[in-house]
Each structure stands twice: as structure tokens, then as C-alpha cells.
Length: 244
Image (cartoon, rainbow, N blue to C red; front, side):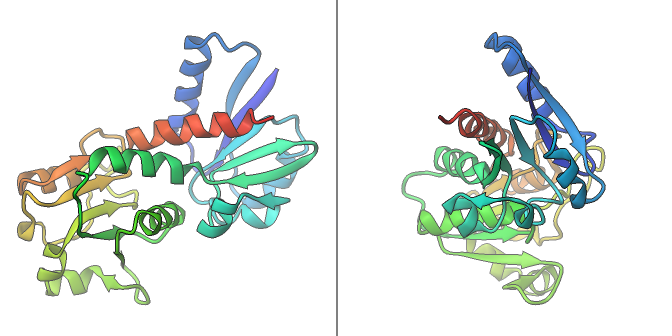
């Protein structure tokens, strides 16, 4: 039996567990199982990797913290500074970032080919790092918004000067705000300055239409949730684990 799984904490609302269970059943993949490994502390990974593991996904809050525990990093993961896939091969662990691939493919499907504006990234966690790398590679200029000082903008600055928001036509939420069950939450933005020329990408996928997306849609913005990205990154994970 090949054991795959997900590490993070908490893991009550895992996409990956359900996705791979369905995949194994639908594609008649035998002798494979996908398990959830909620680790309260990243140091518990040392014990886990002594088990017979075929491959792991990594989620909040360990996408960055896992790096010192790995033997090697793929070049994308190295550049991004975050890992969400671990390959186990010949007694060694190697970190990859399939969020990059999942987001890039989904974003290209979402944006019009003639898109020539700037992006605003909401949030500074592990997921935002993959998003930054994609935007760099697609030559889309971007700025980062955080609750804390030290980044391009704080939410207070954007609310004090709403015209800032109006100038960024792609707005990407990488925070967990609005995730079930706290579905009424959303980033604190002056949504009224938005227009039909704005594109809202929310990495949250549950609920399928978040409060952030609803606020954008109300102003005419185009919206998408994170499901397509998640499917893309999951399939890339499977490809990485089964590389020869």
C-alpha cells in the first residue's frame, strides 16, 4: 500500500483528502491511500518521515517552516521560498511548489489575453509567495497588502486613499478570510471604487462564492475562486510523486 498525505494544522476542511480519494476511485488506482497528518508542531515531521510515505502535500502553517527539514529543493520551490509538495525517493526528501503551476494555469484561463494592468496581492503567507513568482514570470507588475507595516501597502493606507485600489485591475486574495465557516469575512477594502475592468481572484474555494467575490461582483468585477488552482496543484503533485 502506497501512503500519500497532507501535513498542516488544523486539517478539518481539507480539499486534498477528498480529491485524492475520488481520484483513486475514479481512475481505478489500486493500493494507494491518502491520509491527513495534522501536526501541531513542525518538528513532528521528523517522526512522520520515518514511516513508509510515498508523497506528501503541505498546507498552512508549514509551507515555509518545512524547508529546513528537507534534503533538497526544486528550483521553483527554492525561488519561491515555500513548499507544498514533498517527494520521497531513495530515502531522500525533495520539496516542490505545485501551487505555482496550479495558479499560473488558472490565471491564464481567467484573464483576457490583452490584460495589461497591475496586480494587488492581499496577504503575505506561503501561498502569496507562489503567486508573486507567477506574476513575475508573466511580467505582471504587483504590490502586496498586509495588516502589518513593512510591505507595499497596509489596508489602512488603501482605505485612506481608495484611488490606489482603482489602479490595480487584478486583485488576488491569498488570505484565509471568508473560508467556511466564517463566510462573512473578507479583506477590508474600499470596494466601491471598483469597476467592470477589475478581476478578483480568491484562493479560497469554500464557499464557492466568497464574501470577497460577492463584493467585487457587485461592482461589476469578474471573479473566480481557488478550486481550479487546487485541482491543478493536486494533479501536479501526483505527477511529481510518480516521476521516475
